[in-house]
Length: 380
Image (cartoon, rainbow, N blue to C red; front, top):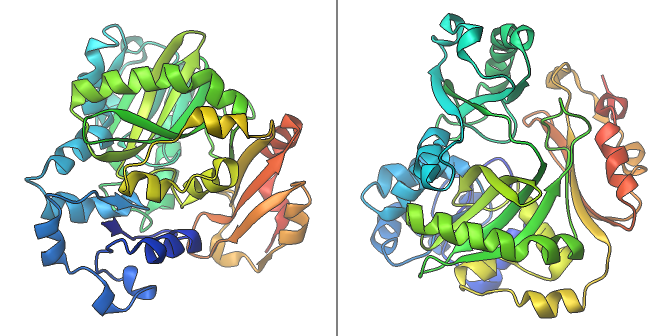
């Protein structure tokens, strides 16, 4: 069963549902794309959920699942995945020396700098994208956190439910060195991890925590697939993951791999996971719901050495979305040599104005995108 929800549903996902006849939960978003008679009622979905695989394009669906399927194992898996504190505690067996602590919004002002181990990362215990995430190197940066937090809290109001982003409890954890990567994968009925895509997440500098661009390539899959699958299988055994789709972010430093967070019940958000079709001819929705496993040996044997990437046209926090008159998409796209899919987003109601899938043979193109000042494409 698929649960559709805000903020974005792609045409590719809708086409996949119709082609395969996947059941879809009846809700306000689903009714925009399907007749009510073709949707699965909430009562029927609850009856079927014991034996059905569940996927959602958005973590906004977590509330429905936890409320209606609270006695099902999927609710347990979501809770552990979504709460960074619970996730860290579960992985102590693998990372016994990893430093982290939980703090509430009220406790932040009372914490003395000498109690902390600099540098560290400060972020919501329950979060999404990079909202409220701050790398903190010293006492001065720590003192600025409260002001930045208040700005983030105002920015988030009305966008996400508390099950997706909750700015009341936070985690302070050691700063993980290395390059950041992300995976779209699922655990099958036996608890074995099946990897559907691996992305590198580059940053402009050490202060950048944005999600501006991710890319995948033949080289990345060949280099990391087996190592990451081995770790995911170990994590799956500890937590007891089964029949569970997820998007996980990790840091890799030589042979050391440390998970950052797990996003449950979905792959890469905003239906960006669709890029696997461009890169590998993999329809991730079909692969999970039909329990298919990529034959990476065959896939990579016939693949080019190009980089497949997506980039997000994010609206700077300094810009009031209501004051935006237009976006110069043509000017924006001049930075992308070979756009494959262009998705214009309703920027009046979302923090982004575009998501673009692209292909390039030059990593410099992606590095240049990280440097862009998005205000240059926005007319006020």
